[in-house]
Length: 300
Image (cartoon, rainbow, N blue to C red; front, side, top):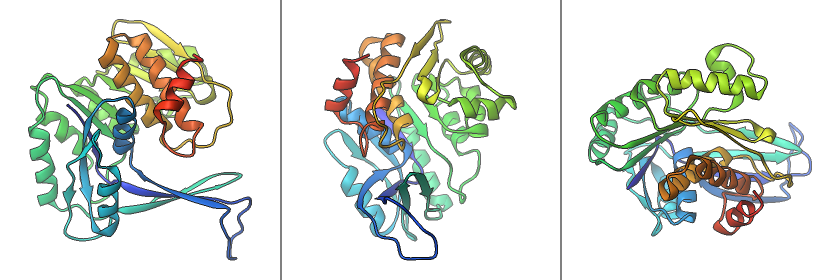
């Protein structure tokens, strides 16, 4: 079973406007909403690829009810912990020329709820996949991911971490199967300017020396590079189509890579499918669909 952890799921409210002005009433041209959070995005795209998963995390209030109802399906089993107070967050994504995001804080997570999540982590078995994705709510300790990974350290599971800065670095001692920083995050981690593919490969290998097994570095319009645990280097470009959406593209890439590797045990194919999923999401208003993934994959 694949388990994804989203500590603070959200409803993403997307509004599109031809222009936006401050201090006046603005009206939308169109609007949509999606159930989000990085781990949930991974679960939803895995479902499009016919891989079931269990989504773990915390929900609260009527917004939490909406997330659980909207995400749950034959392919995504929701096993959220319901919090006694607060509301799951609503993130506002304003698309008006560029993209502006206003992300909510979400509810406080008490110690008892965290303990309940750890019990679910303890139930993960050998052969399972654990995906830790996204940031940590302010009410939780900074070492949450480390604690979860320590709980499964003696199990034969595939660990995937998609986090930023110190969260990512601190996970490396647990030898995650896959991490996916972007080029700017590499620059932040190593306090240098990562400018070209030679730099990307150099610092991806540094992350391997620190514990990562496979490292995908997303490079925006320049595609993505994978440095795999056998020493191989693989690159995949992007299609030149209008980009409608960047939210969830990286999560889609993670889902596609997991699916590709589980199906074929081939790193080059896993990167190809991951890139197809990331591209597919960027060409749609929401997350990648199977039809769009297949369309993009056929052009790679």
